[in-house]
Image 1 (spheres, protein in one colour):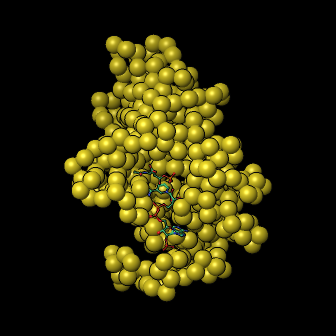
Image 2 (tube, protein in one colour):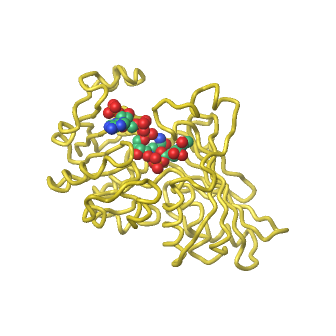
Length: 344
Ligand SMILES: NC(=O)C1=CN([C@@H]2O[C@H](COP(=O)(O)OP(=O)(O)OC[C@H]3O[C@@H](n4cnc5c(N)ncnc54)[C@H](OP(=O)(O)O)[C@@H]3O)[C@@H](O)[C@H]2O)C=CC1
Ligand SMILES: CC(=O)N[C@@H](CCC(=O)OP(=O)(O)O)C(=O)O
């Protein structure tokens, strides 16, 4: 059994890790950490866990001491220190935040307003979107788990960009996220009367996921890609739907596009290319590690429309982090992640 610990276990992504890891046949949750609730059973903070997992929340030092794999699910800027301590003691460190996602420190400085204090850790880290970078991830020990929006977009565009199907500088992305994406903290925008019965774009063309999205798309395309990205707050708890528009590089019919996506994702356990005519819907991926992708052609304008749906808490955070743990620990990637999404 792999002994795993979670720092930031009382956050939304942290408690989702708990939920999923309780069903993982090869992992044992050795410790859960909290600053605010130290000394209390986690089931007091999250009563859905009562009787299932009543572990007492401990200090982060204790989480590190008891675990071989450490997940950090913290606000940005706090993870370097934990990664350093894991590196010194030979533990695997999986960061659900943004601290190990960006390859260029200038991007991190510009979009997060923070510096890299330990550049050697960033050089040792891997950006871990398994379907694209599986071979880079295997055997690594500092794992930067991708952001939720970039996961849906990177998977949605990979086959089209890799195969030169679209003009890389024509990409416009319109994403919608459920409210859990904003985390457990209270804020005016996620206050019930403000977000319920509302639907609001935010951080229009200025969201901090933009450099991460462009990093992945540029890497796939083999040259610089810039995108227009507009996220929206959708009044549901979970899920992200990204609708992505791009001009075709040359005329091609929908059947060929479908064949190309199906070939690219053949054998991928967690990516489902919807049949021609079907539309990806977050209802079909909720509570699961799936990314559903549907493909549409606007023949009048020559634009490809890709719709990509994930559960932000699972494929967009905790599920993908466990997929990465499985990869680095040499387990089948789907271990503990084979749950079917509920029908409603
Ligand atoms: N929600 C989502 O959909 C996704 C989240 N992520 C990433 O996962 C990480 C966690 O996100 P999420 O779970 O949503 O966030 P939350 O705000 O829900 O949780 C963060 C937790 O970190 C703990 N914490 C420890 N130190 C501090 C500190 N100094 N200031 C504030 N909190 C602290 C808090 O718990 P305590 O006080 O008990 O210690 C808190 O519950 C973030 O980096 C986020 O970017 C990634 C993808 C998707
Ligand atoms: C709806 C909502 O607020 N979503 C969050 C993004 C989700 C997330 O947690 O992304 P990181 O992992 O990069 O923090 C936001 O826009 O900031």
